[in-house]
Length: 177
Image (tube, rainbow, N blue to C red; front, side):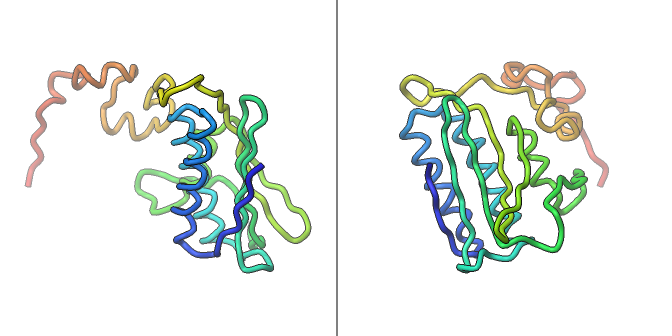
């Protein structure tokens, strides 16, 4: 298990991402899983910094643990007046997407309370790649961000991205103004 105590400050997000990415890559985790884990940690830490108090030490705690092909990520803070929950983030909203992103990228996530702290955790599949830095198979954009995929007119199959837009008329659009 890796444990990192970080200042309750925005700069901690980048520090945590670099440390996590470095350690996971060195242990042979697929690059795409390292990327997903980094996004999850960024969202969990950003939420803790924005919405919660620090731990009594004035810090937040990041932990990660590999168990076989699973990776558990957890961020602990001093709690808040509200329970962490997935918001109704929309394309036009300024916030509220963080835990939705965590939900999409992870196998499961949740919240636990213990000894005056709140921990938001996420578990994702993290098989070792057996060597090299190969990305795992791509995921269709419709599965990850359906509203964005529709708005951007993205193809159902990620391999079709190289062949251009789905519709002839989509290649050139004129906007008034």
